[in-house]
Length: 64
Length: 427
Image (tube, rainbow over the protein chains, first blue to last red):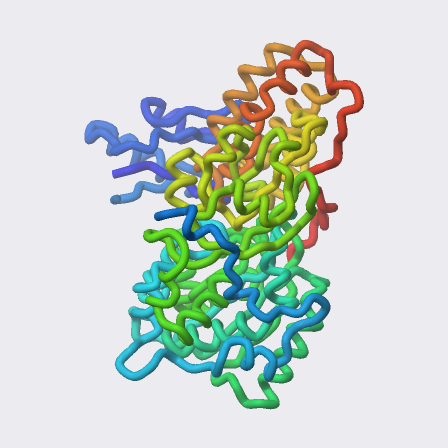
């Protein structure tokens, strides 16, 4: 599983970086910089929580 | 590949062109022969696959594979011809559309027949000077009852990102000509939610020639892995906006010489346009024009732009001007592009103006490395590649500016083309 963001929907609330700091940092304008690699299994539950908590539902968990 | 043996300019697309007007329907047929799908037992999609044709709009995707994917479903499909040449230094599509519009329209009709499309859309920039020739050509074809698939001509806002394929599709579906988040890609779900073949107009013109002459004919010139000919727009010392047709794999040196450029009077070459890569003059001479060769060196053929910058033009000032243009041309939809491109442009303007703060260097490096892959489209990727490779190619100018000495005495600026931005116009 990989974490992606729809950059058009993202409005830099920063919730994702708070809930998944191991995988997501924010740039100086508050937009996520996401590790593009395969998400470690132990982070999957955190990633799902982050995706559900995104105010614009911009965070995407992709199966590929 | 044997570049030496295959480096003659070869007129296929540009065969029989007149300098001052478009070929009429009859003149077009005299130059290229009748319009017909490939002969018995042959199918255009297979012929295009065998030809090895790669898309000529910038991405270089195999055209046959794209056609097969679009045609795979049971649904009626749509053909979109992209003639909205957004690269300010590219003029090849304009030359094709204004001098040989029937070859592009043939390609649309033939591709439509091969992939079960029932509508075609041809897009050019609003107010394009190719419009009169295209209207005449469409009227000629209507009179001669040439086409089974109706083609609609559209005027797209002249914005840099508007000709990205998802933006074209969004525009044709009634929205703004801004890129959309993908998937779905247009080949899955495009115009009217149907599978949509989006091709550059040169690509479709090549398809029209492959239908007439076959894949073996197509492969007889050019690079073995990426055969055929290529339209290239060349500017540099000695020439401006010259469009030439050369076999793929021709050296950059030979291509610019054919176009009348004196590379000895140039300091660096931009390959591929503002989406492309800068190379120093020494490295540029050794390049050959194929997607695979240029990619191996970290570059890209893009839309076939070669821009050789003369000695005495300040690289830093030119990079700053174009970076500001690319920042202005952002659709403003994605945070990284909306914030990052203006920040990069501002840093370059400080450098150009001699008010460089050395601490800016680290920030600029960070912005350049953090931007790629973070937009809905590839605009941030292209802009950062342009700036990053430009800073390396113009290292002497950069160092001079960092020391506060700004441009060399007598340096020229305003050399790279920077169009005015149609602010706020997306429909």
